[in-house]
Image (tube, rainbow, N blue to C red; front, side, top):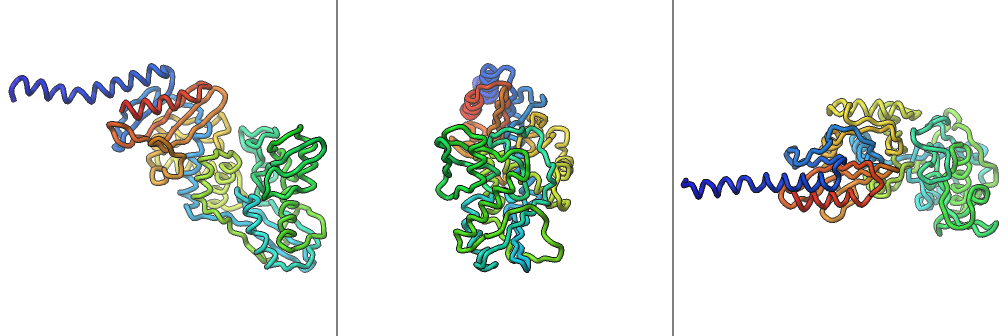
Length: 395
């Protein structure tokens, strides 16, 4: 090979390296103190800026919960709610932690339940939430009316929230599919100013249970049944067999897709708690789920780089490194379609005051599909997407 050809060949070899260096410089200029890691399909690090610095993942932690759930529970797993009827026609309802026991689900459930128990009046409803300890608390969840602070429960409806409209002293449901109940009206009048909104049902478990009982009773009556007695809490009598078991109409994979799109903290921790309950037996506990999670992370050498306090990302005590999360993204890749997609990327965002994160998979111009992790100590949520665009166009 003559000198001109040799020089040309060397120039060709240098071009990708120069382009890569240029992309790194652009990313560093956009977010000099930010955390950015990009890896190709072979595991080569194309960009590694502050890649070992621990960061608060915020809702990006839901990707870890989704991976754990798919591994432990499986894509086709369905949450169950059990119904029992005693000789006095008292209906017992044992919650199984179903995160999607929403009005549309109750509308499907009620006709099958009434067919099983008959249309004669029920003399009472007893709600059994013993699958969850009454004192369960999730780090980061606060005692506010915000929907993202809803209490996790073995038996809750509509994400343990009430969605309604208040005008003066009149309250109506904000959802056509959801009947308004006396308890919902009293809660909304006591805790919500005028207008439209959604409130969580406080950190007192009996509040959410009372609402669940009233709403289930309303759907029983819509389906042709009748409830004459009071709604109370208790446990199913020993030896009583279920007359109907309701399997959630959505498989776990569908629930996770909704979780990763809507980023609902309540759903995330219901799923996270079920991981421990399923593997180690009930009642659920945060410690059981953390034990199962840590055992799985240890198996993949991720225990130091993925440190969880809970499953939604609402706790600022969660700590990840970019390299750890990138490795987990490799494990989660068969389920990448569960993530939100757009503009050649599948991704999950995370947002706190002073925290902006983004992680997932993206199609790049020169390196095919890449895994990426972006974490900024910033309130500029748009910057993470500018960085993603720079990754896609520059790499």
